[in-house]
Image (cartoon, rainbow, N blue to C red; front, side):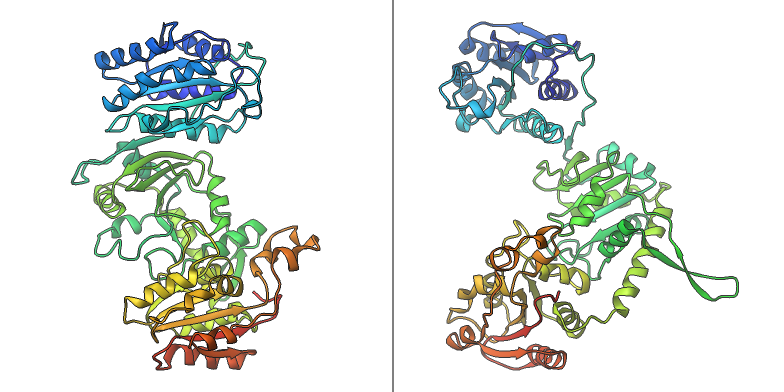
Length: 551
């Protein structure tokens, strides 16, 4: 029987899953649930050592002999500090020492109770990673343990510290078996990328509903690589932040799926058009995730429903980025080479995902037709749709919030966006900096709050006429209109959404920026035409005033 502490059981199961077979354990009451579990597990052998200073070096000797990771487990308080000399030695010997310390619950740290010193970070720079395991959030706990163990066992092995807060009562050992845990694998292909992990290749081959998802990606990637075979058999979803030059209207598809409203156009027996309810699109059973952040909250929610799916992350960093909460493996390498190698490996295999791809393509085609047919009234959406329809080139930056969401609806090209942390600041400054080092036109589509926050970007004598700004001013942060429940608060408009009646005209005048404005559909179209084609040696800004309720 095992402890009834969830974080202790997840830790025990993952230690065994990652191949840890030896543990040096020190006496104590707070770490008793951990020691009990390690002793109970049939694949782990425990070695008791009373003095923690000595225990750490015992573990070093075992790692030297075995060439394997070893756990050293201590109780709370100064017991952890006594490991510092051994941990420092393990750091410089590149040994995968796994320090596991029991701890008091976080609310009691520094509260003058027994053994309540702050333990995370106590070993300083002599551990590659420190994690403290939550007692109730199982997904987060699983992720943290996987991260720590992968870091310990990397090619350049180093010590790690896993801190385990445990709430009393401590001594309940009534759980018959450990949980099924999700072990994350991490592997680097051979230098020529010919050797990919079999679980990736075999899993994709057998999947009935495979999907490739691209997050934000530099547009210079994926140029000249041969992935036609792969992309012709697997549905690929991406946003305007990816390197692919066409709109993927998956957000509209998923919205209609959520409402149960998706329709498919079919031909009747006499060739007449008719719409029928399409078959429900199920979440994928195999996901390859490339690139960084994904704007669509709806897509992230959809992929998190795929609880039984395998997600493989392809990245140069190899970091555990479990966006969809079903990560199974990480391929460390540049995504272009990995995908090209994967495509070549699948040339002579029969893939199973054709039906799923056809279902998605039908839904995406239908969504594209609706988007093309829809003519929004005078609004931010109308301005962005007209701008994108008449754009003929140049680099295009979008600010966060409503602006980038409109880009994902209408942009048929890569867009730049500060989506790394999704902040309001710096969007205009980034576009301005971009414009200084290129001769092509640089467009910035930006909302009012982002613009006024970053207005000092225009206070620069180096700016040229290639910077063009489309300012969407509806007098507040429009993104807050879309948040369920916030409309019930009387504080929303003035205090949360920062309602205002500010214009950019004075800012443009003081900074020598050509100022244009539009207050109706015709003025907006004329203004965008001017913004696109006017010859000027100074930046040009078009401020489009739309009603507060306009998106």
